[in-house]
Amino acid sequence: MPEDIRNRAAISHVDVTALNFIRSSPPFVFRRHFRQGLRSHIMEILDPVDVEVEQTGMMIAGVRYFPKATPRRMFRIFRARLKTLENALFEIGRVKIVEHYLAPGFMARSTECIVDYRGPEGRDLMLCGFQEYVAGEALDPWTLLGAVDLLPALYETFRCQDSPLTLSSEQWVATVRQKGARFIQKIKRMISEAGHIPDLAGAGNLIITVSGGIRLVDINNISGVSLAPSIDLDEKGYPVCDKSIEALSLIEEKILGRPIDMEEDIYKHFLDPTRRKALKAKEALFWKRSVGS
Image (cartoon, rainbow, N blue to C red; front, side):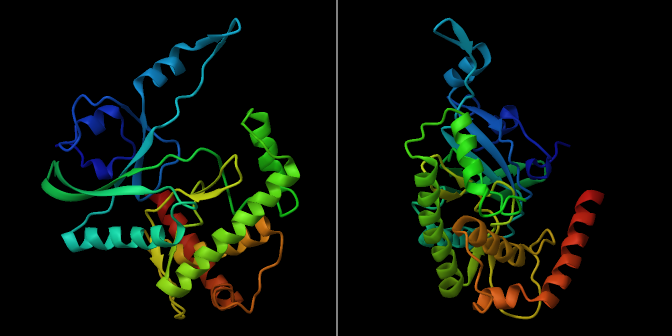
C-alpha cells in the first residue's frame, strides 16, 4: 500500500502532481525546499523556464552563469491529521491571529486551503498553504554572534552575494534595528492581547531581507501562551512556547543591541532559572526521542 504523503520524510514533484487535488500536468515545477519542518512538507513552486536556465546556464559577457531558480511561491502540506473540520478551522484561525499582528510587513502571507485528500487509507481532510516566497538570510537566534557582530556579518553576506544593497553597513544595521523593534513590539502585543506566539525558535523561521526587513516564514507551529507553572508541549513533544519566548529575548538582545528587561512579565515568568532548568530536561527528552525515531 502506498505511504500517506504526510508520513513521508521527503516528497518530489511527482508525489505532488499525484495528489488528487493538484493538476497532473501543472505549468510549474515543485521542488523540495531545503528548509523542511517537522510539521509540514515545504515545496518551492518554480517556473520551468527558470529551472532550465539553472540547469543549462546562460551566457553573460562570454561567461556561463547558472542562476538558481527563484520560487514564485511556496507550497506547504500540513503533516498533522485533522480529525474534524473544526480542527482544520482552528489551525487556520491561529494563522489568522499571526496575520492580524504581523501582516503584511513582518510575515510571509499565505492562502490556507482545506482539501479532500484521497490517500491510501481513504478520504481525509488535509491542510495546505500557498505562501509568499521571501528571499534573504536566516536570522538564527541561537547564533554565537552577539549584538556587535551579527548584523554586520549579515550585511557582508549580502554584499558578497552581489545583492542589490542600497544602504551603507551603518544605515542597513540602523534599518534592521528600527524594523526589529517594531517586529518585537508586534510579537509582544500578540502575546498580551491574543495569548499566542509563532515558532521563533526554529532554524530558518525568520528571514532578514536585503532591504533590512524581518519576516516570519514558518507559520505552522503557533502556540498558546500561558503564565501557568506547567511547560506546554506541542504534539511532537517540543516546548515550542518556552523556546519561542527564549528566542524572542535573544532577538531583542542581538538585533536591538540592548539587554532585556527581566521585570517584564513574559521574561520574568519564562526565563525564571528554575523553569529553564525544567525546560532543558524536556528539550533534551524531545531531541532524544527525535534522534531515536
